[in-house]
Length: 313
Ligand code: G3H
Ligand code: 13P
Ligand code: ZN
Image 1 (cartoon, rainbow, N blue to C red):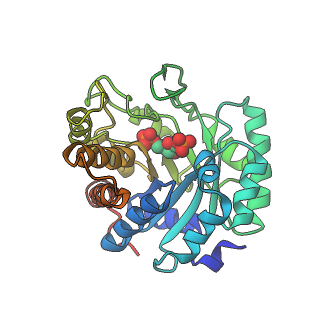
Image 2 (cartoon, rainbow, N blue to C red):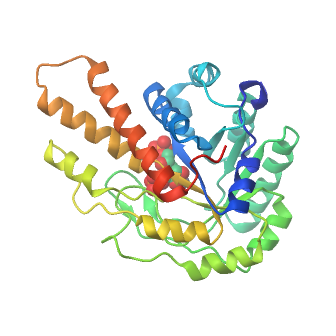
């Protein structure tokens, strides 16, 4: 099935508008009906373009048919919403998503030798472009998590000197870069560490027509960490990227910003609080609806106060 049959937008189109008007489109990860619903509610309330991001593991969790059935049944404006494969790790995985009806895919070859990253990125682009599907690629390595508890220190900032050649050779549409963000909830020792805006400026200068993407951008709101810790959780020393840093990155050419951890925190905090306060309740709809609403509220906050993407459709 082609993505246009679902009324989904070409992702490049959303990002080109964002680049032109100096705002960013949020990519929010989802993995079930509640999280999809929460994000689409925020999109509708704010009239914002949104990228619905599905990781390989989220796709496996939902299953092809349930996911595409939910997308087919969802209500949104034509050309407001893109459906995006997040961190596809192989040509086959990207091809599979394109054939399902995704409007963009990320091929993440950032851990591969450069020559292999270029080769597979180009192969994905050649296939995707036949269907007018856009492709995000990545250069540089974000530090991150092997699992929920182990932080990997290894990262490599994107080299501004190779980005132009990379885009020319791969013919891909947007580029994820490493300037100091990282995946997960434990990105920072505090809220004040700065991203490498000097590198971002160089990259933007070298590929001014390519929308740039910031992964690992969650702000890790301390109100959610406090709620989680207050109601039975244990997430000490979790810090994220300050909203001012993300806004500055957007002013310097970032057109897509990825959020997953923040939404998980909003959701989990609400579930923990509800169950802690209602010890006899065992109806999942009671706590899931609260979690969904909290996630919608946080998506709205990101859209209005960080992305600047409200009323852009
Ligand atoms: O960047 C990765 C996302 O946070 C996806 O994580 O594989 O647990 O869905 P996941
Ligand atoms: P966070 O873990 O910072 O939310 O990053 C999510 C992400 O980059 C998804 O691709
Ligand atoms: Zn990511």
